[in-house]
Length: 276
Image (tube, rainbow, N blue to C red; front, side, top):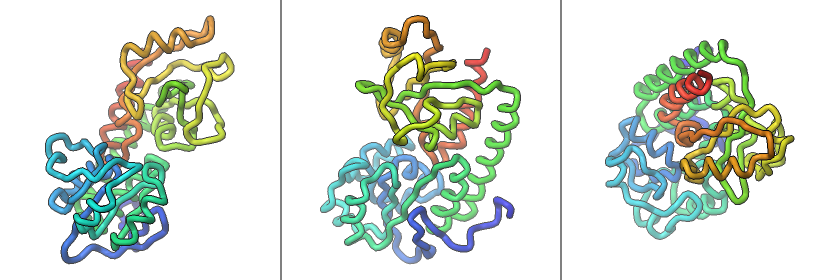
């Protein structure tokens, strides 16, 4: 089936089938990357609430009231905003909190992209619910073009093992069962460990973990790694283990929605630079 064929049913990650929105639409988004997507779809006049972590698009998003964070929100404030739709994510928003909100928000849209290709479903789900089908197809076309270019270039790159760090004290990374790891895999970077007990495991920088690792990538989020942390990592590495250590923009690897299109370009360029 062609990627351009629209879904017959607008089914979200929880299996809920949504009808196209009619009448007054008031959206609260608790997912930073989807808040950005809503703007990209031309729905800025429908957004009435966001988290403090919803910071893009810069400038434009400032007019939207904050309702808390991704893990805790001001229930009374959201109730007062009178949303018709709440957009949440399986990884980012606690289920118990969402269940509390469902008591007074009529429609909950649950998202959970796991593969980069899931962005196509996401564009069509959000665009289909809120009447932005044409724009969602434009995003699909742009994503598919970047994906095809990425896959074509990746054929010439030798696959490399990388350690992608998202936190310190303790060091934390991503398992291969994550959107981040699968984005990195598109440019030939395979994250370690190969298997893990959780999706975001704590790790020790042991010779076993770092065996064959070519790069250690320090993400800008959720922990804000900076240049000063490169020396700190080097001190923690086992003797004789000397991978390259680089900072990486976590938004380009972890933010789905329209950011994923730019993310593919960013990762291609970074992989090419580090391969020189």
